[in-house]
Image (cartoon, rainbow, N blue to C red):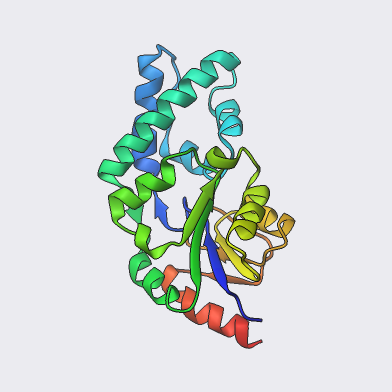
Length: 212
């Protein structure tokens, strides 16, 4: 088995932006006069889900109009602040991406809003390592559909998806793409073709999988 590309999830796989996201959420809620306070644990539980699901989980008592307003406030502010401050990169992620980029085409697929992946690139200067990216905000599709669309758009023949949650695994399976679990991230995943305890393990893990 030889992979021609790696598609990465973003949150919980390449970086952890939960601290900044928590500040943004609480500022937006306060500005709207909504008596809800969000913790970093709340944010971590929601990472990787579509925005409409996140809104229902975080603020179920709000009307759809209020949820839409909150979503706009959070997304706009989050993109701006993250592009300036960045998040916490996982250890050795830049070096790992550089090594992987010598053997594979690299991409990102996330359930985030438009502008979020671009904020990651702007803050950490890693955009040159990736050939392309798509997100739920771009496509309006579930992650499985976004994975399929990216694979079609870039003519990928045998990609592998790396993510940290069961949702990532399920989306990869629905798209017909093998999955590797980023076990150092936010969530658990029951299945897949391999698991990495740190980003540094990925090159050898991929080589081992390809040899079998």
